Image 1 (tube, rainbow, N blue to C red):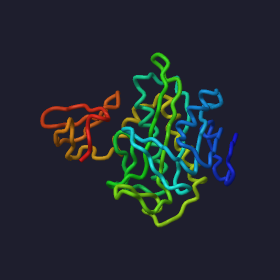
Image 2: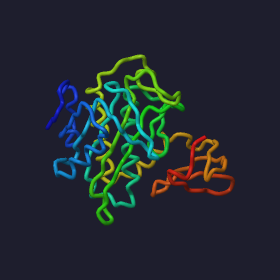
Image 3: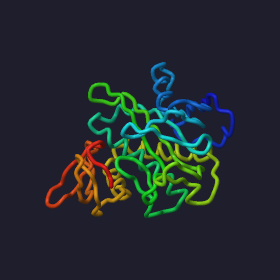
Image 4: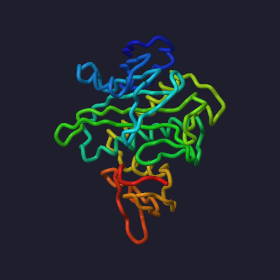
Length: 262
């Protein structure tokens, strides 16, 4: 494993993987691990599976252009670079599903099977109605193929206090303190397992597993679309990653910015 700027607990982080996390760049502080990963790609210094991880991210990005905030040194903030040339650009949501499931696998190993632990479309991780983590995947396309993917993951681990009531952490849920390097190594293993499932073409299992843990799946709830209230049931996600909502006698499909949970 190639470790750069990593000062502590190297042996604890070493993942039992083929390539994911075998090149590790640890930064005490950075604006965004996704941005740092992009720089490494531009310099042709990022191998397939390269992981950038930091103690303090000052300008992390989330879905819908939101900022991801995390207390320094208390949470996991990392980005993984993959080169999924096998995956057509039209199927890129499969990668999002694989990553979300990997994080869910990782949390299940720590919390045990929990009905409250869910993936909130497209790929936030929630416990009940509180957010445990978020995922931001940035793909670069070459024609009809994905040239490389930067998988950014932020997970609340030891943080106890949040600026909003809709956030929680592993520590809040269990009353325990966790060794971050050990958890990071296990997360990288979960990520590679799901990525290899995708690379092997076992996409039916990925889609089925995603629906099993999808937040509000087949439950009637309130939403807002186009500024108008809407009530419906989430019945699936199409191949393009759009949310399928059954409303009355029809099924409507929504992109990320077109619908809001209420």
